[in-house]
Image 1 (cartoon, rainbow, N blue to C red):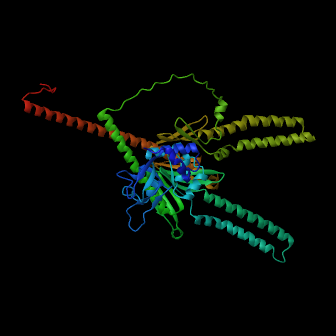
Image 2 (cartoon, helix red, strand yellow):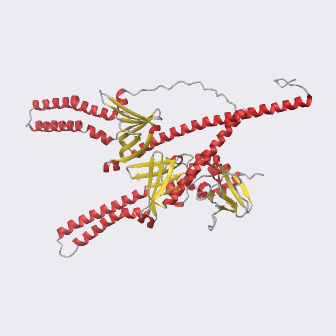
Image 3 (cartoon, rainbow, N blue to C red):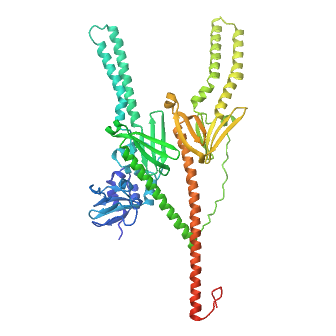
Length: 572
């Protein structure tokens, strides 16, 4: 008799993986698992790839064996879970898991595992490999993580980088103390002591704030590997967050490099090469470990894609050969009355999204130049209008004191109003429209650089996504670093597109990269579908010929045994 799944609820309550769930959620989670019992010495896997399943040890213990000599095999005991992350450094095909003693295991297959993650996102933080990573994931809101995506590796920059970053603040703080000691020595006048003490206090406060800033800045950069991509998250507190990432199946090579000091202290750099450029993970601890993790998951992702393709071929063959598929029509619901749409007025449409630098519509992503560029284009007309208002206010004050005549004030107001309404405002509006009309677009097939002069010519450059050779982004000076805007350079053959002064250039680069990746995947899937159909056609022809040959052999045997000549339809 099968065990009631609810009997596993008390056990799940004891696990940190499910510690934040209530009774109802735990019952739902427990109902998804199946119980597997293995005796001591029995192998858990038999002809099935271990990375397909997820297990939790409810009782007993199991041993993970990689076939490496001289290394004690790791054990998994009560409450520990294992999935592909626990087979990370071995060869998945040759790894085996064997019961050390009689063990009960809670089991989920691949589909049920990802369904659990989608329905209960709170499970994800507990799946990280290290306790530190689990705490960081729970504290940080990585809202860009997908429903079926799990973080398996997370690291910050090496602690040595924090020490290097704090060297300047410590030196400044030491200088403040030295200054205070100097002015406190005997023979220094009280006025000098007051000035020196004030400067020392300000210097110490600045050093303290500088040190706190560097500490927080160090702690806000993360290097992450999930079951789908490798990601570098860079945050500047209160200002912005940028992200560089590479889907695992687009990675071409993973390299490491380190300096002599880095090798002594245990930090280095990992360079991930993709078909559109490089992502550099700088100054992280154990760079070889991260490189191995990325390589391993890249291979596993590819293996999973190959298994999926085999299943699709099998399904296509079954559908063609045995005609088991059936198409069920779906009744379409009668369209209801459409809600009235209130269209905004022309002024509202024109100024809508005044500060929106990135927006999507009909599958196209549009970028405007960041607002510092708008200020640079339009600052002069408002400044001159402000001067006119200042002069008018000055004349009005003179009129109140009796030093300016009423006629002069009225003339100044009239001229000032005409200048503002007929010169400065149209001038500002022209500059605003000129800024608004300079846009960059990314669609599912092309990139566009569009420059349109108000009441003038339009210059529109485009290039297919499939022709893009490389991408890179760069922030523009100190202000660009603080406000997170800059350039994205796109190399297309011998031509170069530059998206200038765009906000979050790393995100713009990633948008283009994602569109390239999506287009490439669609092309690969279309080619794979054609190859599958071609293969199925060949198999169908082969199957039909085999049937015909078999029938011919049966007919020949029948004629020989009974001396009866059969017609082409198989009858005498």
